[in-house]
Length: 221
Image (cartoon, rainbow, N blue to C red; front, side):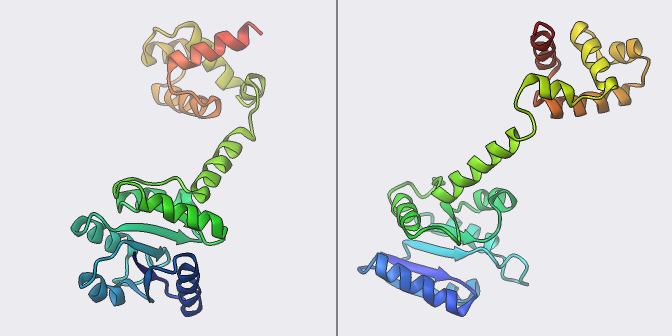
């Protein structure tokens, strides 16, 4: 297996290459400080895996997302794993767009690095593997989404008096148009839309039907 490491910090570059050499003694490993420095080598060799430090997006002409996207377009079989200190929610969209195959946080445990590399190498080149770092991110998102509201009562209590009135009127007249609801509430259409947007966000729902379902549920309790 031929592995390329791209890491702009010289000590981390060497450490990453040394670690990979210990984990995969049969692999041939080359390391480079910037994508542009790796280009000639990649063009002239068969590369199986790239471990790419996601720290180049602010460097002029060293956009790692564009670099990987172009590389994957030309050589679809190359597997690419991003490792970074960036929070995944900030970069996930870009990683998926560039067709990275997985993500590792730089504080990932060695066993997690190995399991991620092994999984990526055994999956299709278009597949994004949900690494332990990725799953930890998903767990934190779930916890964060739940930490404010645990019950329907707490969600209901988060609404202002005006939002409660809009919720009641909308739920009891769910077949009415927004124009009709605004008229019944004595507010403008734009004001109604703003209230509904805030209500949907607080209650984690997406429609009048969902709002009616929530209202009927808490009304009966």
